[in-house]
Length: 104
Image 1 (cartoon, rainbow, N blue to C red):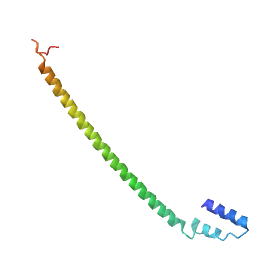
Image 2: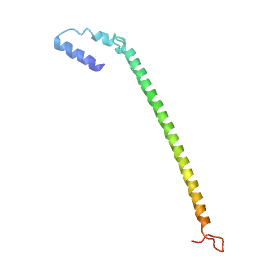
Image 3: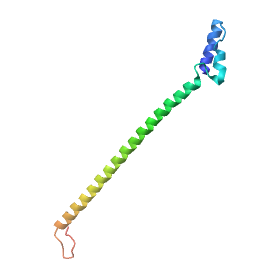
Image 4: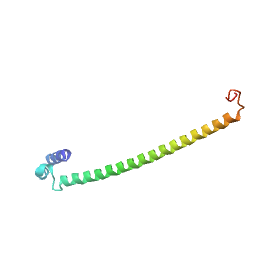
């Protein structure tokens, strides 16, 4: 708004013409006849819609990440269980000493 005003002032001073638009810019607390308030409201609605879509996208990303974490936990648990099973099989396959412990 300030740049537009300074351009008008410069343009008018340069061409020696009256500032016909100056009053229109200042009327209604800076609203132009094109209603700056309506333009600002439209921009805010557009920005709000963009923010909302980004928030939804982030929620989807979080859900995806949580699902991947759960899959990794399940994989780790299965690997641990498999390792314990293999360890038991290995221990049982060794000859047992008189004390009841597997020989090394």
